[in-house]
Image 1 (cartoon, rainbow, N blue to C red):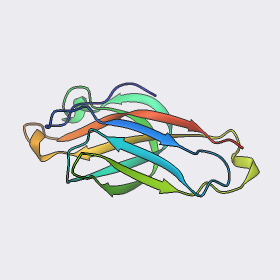
Image 2: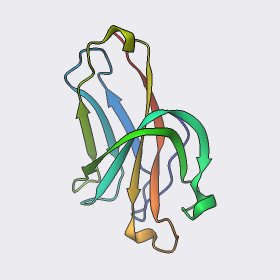
Image 3: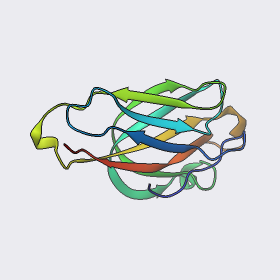
Length: 130
């Protein structure tokens, strides 16, 4: 895990977890929890980056970006503020040992007092293996 998250208006601090990061896995998964329930969240995917304090551009205190973003995907949160994104890791030998970093971002209308009303999880780096 990398760093800490910033609280939502619920108020919980979003968390991140994941499983099955091996080559050829048909069911790799990144989970988000303690998000705003019955809403949506964005999974950021990329490489680990120098932490960037997003409060300098209007986000709530503690909102820090830990990912150099290559891609992102949206996901719905359930009644309990949980979500997950599943994906396939290709069976490409050159990917063995590669690191991917993930982080959840959630636009939170309850944080309207801030120009950038977002909550963030901490980051998570996964090494692709055999």
